[in-house]
Length: 614
Image (cartoon, rainbow, N blue to C red; front, side):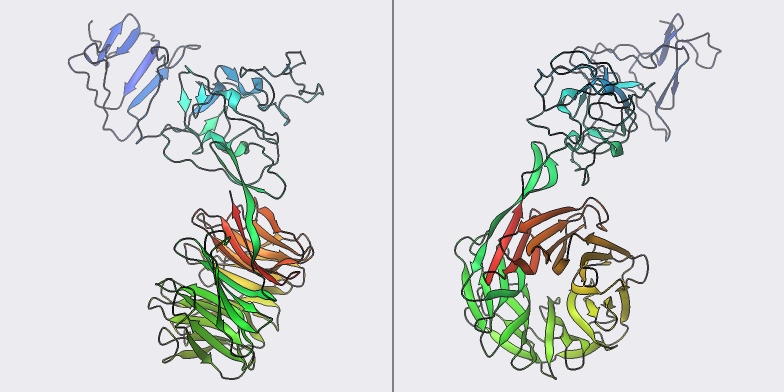
């Protein structure tokens, strides 16, 4: 076959091939021609592989179609072979599929109804009876191009037809707002399979036009990613409409269907008298709850160490301090050995105290220390351990009505302590929540009683003695009760709190490390008087999860925010509604991101624990 010089003028051609690459075809000619057709290489009969290798920074191969009505690319393969394949290191981007299995999206009907797995063109009922195209399945008119179940906007002039999405035929997909039951219906022998649409697995999608909440779930490890499906970005698709059973919340999707949370192990773990106020909880290395709390009957500080993840057996309960009326406003952390360290208030003496337990259950060897006795001090404590394992405590100085900080000089706070007044501008420093930043400097959220504001202190050194930045974060109503603070990946404060003037649960997401600019303030829940006793944790995405009390109904609730600022997509779960419950909450997330909550049952005077699992 003679070689045509590509620099010569060309006759009218079916296909013009521009190669911006180095072409390696063994001994075969690079460009060959038969009549008016240009041929790139020739069939490789030696090992059935022909290579096109390029090192140019631009496109390696450009195909220009100069004959109207003809395809730009004709790929001919054996039956069952994919016409296009990329390796795991590459992506197919900007792929726009006009058809699925040879049919336009407008031809598909809902899954979850009886059918044999084949398509049922829109305009026919599932029983095969005819209804005009542009009418819904009930026979009522809705113009094509309007949102309703089973109808999707046609998009003309698209170039690609994907037979499968994530290995599943189109019969596997349902419209949002309708229940999707059963597994996907695989159809074998198709030629093309897109693993992803805009970076998401097919389990995340169904037709739009219906309300939905939450975000898509990415699935890693796929090889192909289509930016458009039938001319639409993934933003027009909704999660498959699934209704979780009563008392459960939709929290995501897996390959086998929806992930619904459900409360388990919601039970009293200590009911000996009136116990369970002022709870503080952490999970140990096994993921088992450890809880400090106040025994109101005896006026004691107590600790419960659960014997399993659900606290259903093997629990150990210890009285840590019984000297007078003590044990209010507890805050708990575990040291490097997994032994509890607790800050708390001694009401009899009006002192801030610390308990450093001598073993994992606080049953022996405990060291009890009075950290601050300068007046009536030690309410609203919040505790962290520094890099040395030394306690750092924020608290309220009731005599002076100030925000205070104690930085201990050793592990038991017996010597070398630094006590600092952080903010003394009026009646200030209630509902403190403390976190240490990357430098080990305290960051504290708290309530300004005089002005009814949420405040933040970012300390300029380890003891808060200089360089502190004090900011009013939210001055709406009486915002700043029951604050709970976390720092996101950028070291920016995120604070849940209660607006006592409006009875709302609120969230402040700061736009700067000191909350002096770019803050986002959001009402998370306003359904009644809600938001008492908040406890905040950020999930793996950095999105807030908050436990709190619904005062109107006397319930324990959890809010899972749908984005970093809780402005949309939030999911709310009533975890416990048996009596007046949900006070003094403390929230942690287990290794799977499931909330575990300790709280007080005011009806029965019990300490309770609830876990939400998927």
